[in-house]
Length: 337
Ligand code: ATP
Image (cartoon, rainbow, N blue to C red):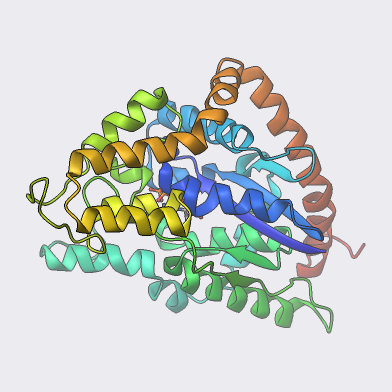
């Protein structure tokens, strides 16, 4: 079997990008034969960029309900909350101690913040907390704790995954004594999966508040957000540049290739942006409508969600607790087992 692992940060309301980029493909993967899937709510990661406790608590419920409403079988996969597995931060510390600081200096997420600061003539590390700086190590711990072999990620995460491999190799080399504790994880990049643009044209992201919500607020909220997508000033009747339009990118994420071609032709033949937005909403609803009721039911029963997460945590800890005991012994914190 191949172990696959994906997480979603509990930093806000799940959106169309999370669904098309992570939730839908991972549910499909979980149904393949020979796949042992691990899906988690990355709540320790959320603390790096969100200091609003209510937002984090709410996001946790929304993300769990979204996974299940979208069809994830919590009995078949291991669905858990990162902070329910105390071995993860413990492993993170062990990995921190074998990670050269220079490696983290080169991490994209950190460098992007420094570059922004330099561009606006602020101190390079302005607003950078240690969580952001060393976040690739927590990500490595997430992956290595369960010895996941395949990690589906967007292109922006490829470097962080390479860092996880480096860190794993270093630990194996220092403490393995010929035995490898960690499997070296591999990225899985799905070229079919696009990065969806948000309402402001940047990547759709929970922490940018530029998202089209998936289930929250019902179909109405999804429509209202689509109505706010910025388009160019071309009038109905004028040909539109489909390739360059965010609407087309979003449409393609929900439609078959044939439907997308049709949509594109209509835009090029002068379909108005208003009509295009309606078509986009109708196409999205075709896919989401059947899941909305289940989502609402779950959100009305937070206790049920909590039970599912507790069961997931118990499954995850059956693996993490004994593995951690081995690792503690390996580094000399406990007698050999
Ligand atoms: P945050 O703002 O906290 O980083 P996010 O919404 O950008 O949140 P994450 O929780 O970091 O998303 O990512 C969860 C998963 O959703 C990842 O697999 C990521 O690749 C995917 N994802 C996030 N945003 C998009 C997007 N705009 N298009 C496609 N996939 C996305």
